[in-house]
Amino acid sequence: MIFAAPLRPISGILLTLSLGVATGSTDPLRAAEPAHWAHAQTPPMGWNSYDAYGSSVTEHEFLANATYVKDHLLPHGYNIVVVDFRWADATAADYDPNGIGGPLHADEFGRLLPAPNRFPSASDGQGFKPLADRVHGMGLKFGIHVMRGIPRQVVTANTPIEKSPFRAADAANTKSTCKWCPDMWGIDAGTQAGQDYYDSVFRLYASWGVDFVKVDDLSYPYHEKEVEAVRRAIDRCGRPMIFSTSPGATPPGKAPHVADHANMWRISSDFWDRWRDLDRSLDLADAWQKTGVAGPGRWPDGDMIPLGRIGIRSGHGKDRRTHFTPDEQVTLLTHFAMMPSPLMLGMSLTDNDARTLELITHPGILGINQDKLGRPGRRVLKNENKTEVWLRALADGDQAVALYNRGEEAAEITLTLTNLDLEGFWSAHDVWSGTPADPASASVTRTLPPHGAVLLRLRPVR
Image (tube, rainbow, N blue to C red; front, side, top):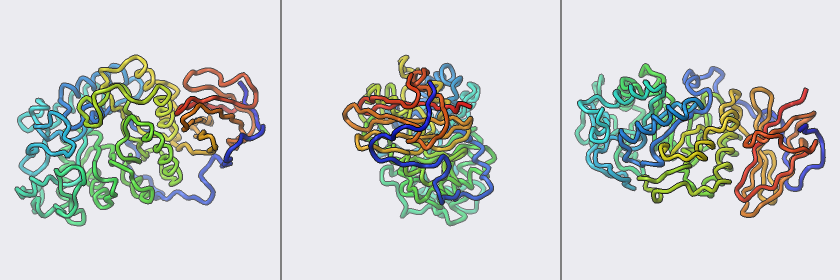
C-alpha cells in the first residue's frame, strides 16, 4: 500500500515530535567514543541460564543449550551463551531464595572457581577455560554472571591478592552488602587494594576466555565507584568483554555514567512472564529514551526473555511454559525490537516448540532490533483507550511503528502520518505477517486484542 499524509488525527493525546533528538537535548557522553562500545555495536543476542535453571545449572545442561544456539540460532545472530548465578556453589542442586549454599570454590588468591561437581571440565583448577574453549569451538561467545565485590569467606581467610602487596581484608568494604545474596562484601573501590582485587579477577576471566560478563548488584542501588573499578579491570585484562550491569531499575539519572562505562544495563528488576512486568517495561523504556544515551555500544536492557519452558529450577514459579499469552509474546518481542533491547533468551532451548522458535528468529523483528543506526524508539502518541504508538528511525531511512494496546479489552487505533509527523508518501508493511499493512491509501486502522501489538515498517516512496 501507499501511505500518504495528511488525514485527521485520531482522538486522544496527540504528541507531535520531530524525527531527531528532542529539542534542546544534547548528547551527554564525551565526544570521543569509549573503545568498549565497539564490542556491542548492535544489541547483544544470546542465551542465559537463569530463567530456566536459577543458581544450579550444570555443565551438561549448559552445553545442551549452547548446542541448540549453534544449530538453530547462530544463523540468526544469537552468539552468546551465559552461565548465570552462583556457579561456584557445589551444593546448589536447586534454587535457594537467599543465595545461601555451602562454601564457594575459590583459588589461593580468593577468586571464585566453578564447582567441579557441576562443571566437571573445571576440575584441577582449570576454571571455565575448557568450557569456554568448547563454546568458542561452536562459533559462540562465552559469558558468566558474577556478583559485585569479594567473597566474605575470602575476607575471613584474608587471602593474598594476586600480583598485589595487599590482602583480601584490605580490599573489602564490610559495610556494603547485597540485600538478597549474602555471599559477598562490597569492594572498597577507592583504594588500590580494591582495584587490585578486581584486576586480578578479570585477569583470571581473560585467561579462561570470557567474552561477556554480567556483574550483579551494581545497578540498584547504583554503585558508581565499583562500576568504574570493573570498567578499569576489564580494560586492563587484555581481552575484550561485553560488560552488563544488573539488576535494575538502574536510575535514569545515572544514564551518562552507566552508558560511558557499560555496554548494557538493566532498566528493571527481574522481568518474568507477567503482564505487569511487560506493561511497566514500556514506561521504563520511555524514561530511558528521554535520557538520550542509548545507541551503538550502550543499550538499556529489558532483561532475559521468559518465553518457552522456564522455571525448571529458578525459584520464580513452578516448572512451566511461559504464562505470557500468544498476544503478549508478540508484544514483548515488538517492544524489545523497538527499544531496542539486548535479546538474551531465558528459556530451556532444548524444549522449544516450533512457535517459540519462529518468534525468536523472526527476520523482521531481528532486523529492527539489530538495526545499525541504533536509535531508540520513542512514544509519540498515548490515547485514552490505553492504546499508544511508538516510532523508531532506521538506518536505511525506514521508520518502524509499533501500535500497543495496554488495556484489558480489545481497542481500535487509527494511524496517519499526521500522528507521526511524517510527510510525503510511504509504503507500509506489517512486520509480523510480512504483508502490506492495508489496502487503504492514507491510514491504517487496527483492532488490537488485549495486551496486543502491531508492528509496521514504513518506507519512503521516492
